[in-house]
Each structure stands twice: as structure tokens, then as C-alpha cells.
Image (cartoon, rainbow, N blue to C red; front, side, top):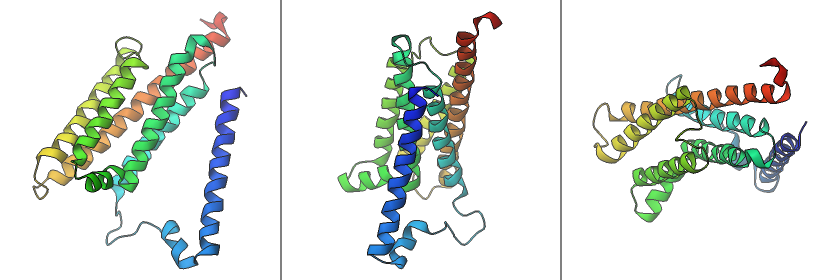
Length: 213
């Protein structure tokens, strides 16, 4: 096991340990009823309540996890420094996006500063584009199929932002179109990450066993 994978493993264990201690402390120091807010199941008036948000968050965090795998599978040397920085940036980006989708961070921020939350999402998209160009080598580093997944994801993301910022809230079927655009963008980004991970594993095999070419 290399240094990167050990670091990721122990960081994950430490984070889960701190999380567990914090929630136990909440129940002991405040009350079980208060702690129940953090442990409650997501329930509603229908069987598949919040299913699309659940799927969207799953896809975003899965994408972050796949990029973590890419980071671990890339050798820690000068030759791959920018590549590793890109993978780490994607872990942080999609980890944040999943957290935002689940806990409504950009909506809360938009309400606090009286700023359109669609513009905040646009800013996040611009940051991701910058990371793809500067660290990800979008112009040529990725193979053709990788880019097709990415371009389609960008199209659905732009559609989501446009619907959120331009269409009236009560318009039918605005809600479905906005949320499903987000889900399709997440699914395509997940496929983008999986394709990169597959290629990275194949490259690692060739680096380790060049006689198998």
C-alpha cells in the first residue's frame, strides 16, 4: 500500500471517528430528542419521497469517490504532479457539490446575501471549467469518449442553471426539468470519472508490467 492510499485510509478513519464522537456528545450533553434530528430517516407522504435528490447526491459523491481512486492509483512523483492535483480537486469539488445538493448550501447563501443562487451555481461551474482546463488538460489530455461525457454533462448543467435562473417557479414542468437535468449531469460526470479511472488502471498496469503491451 503506497503513501497516498494510507493517507486516504487514515484520514477517512479519523474523520469518521470525529463525526461519531461529535454525535454521541450531542446526545449525551443535550438530549436524545435533539440528537434524533441528525439520525432521523428521510420520510414523507409518498413511498419514494426525495428519490431524485437521493440519486443525485449518490452520483455526485460516487464521482468524488472514483476520483479518489484515480488519485490513489497515480504514482506520487513529479511526472504526475498536475494529474494528481486534478484528481484531488475533483474529489473536493464533487464532495462539495454532493454536500450542497443534500444540505442546500448555495440556496442558504443566496438567501443571506440577496444574490441569485443560480449565479452561485454558475460560479461553481466556471471554477470547475477552470480546473478542467488548467489541471485536467481538457484540450488534449482526455480521450475522445471522456470528453463526450464531459460535454454532455456540461450541457445538462447549463440547462439546469438556465431553468433555475430564467423560468418562473410555478411553471409546469419546470421543477422536473431542472432536477432531472441535474441528475443527468451527475450521471454523465460519474461516467466521465469511471472512464478516467479505467484508463488510469490500464496505464498503471502498463507502467508496472510493460512487457504485457
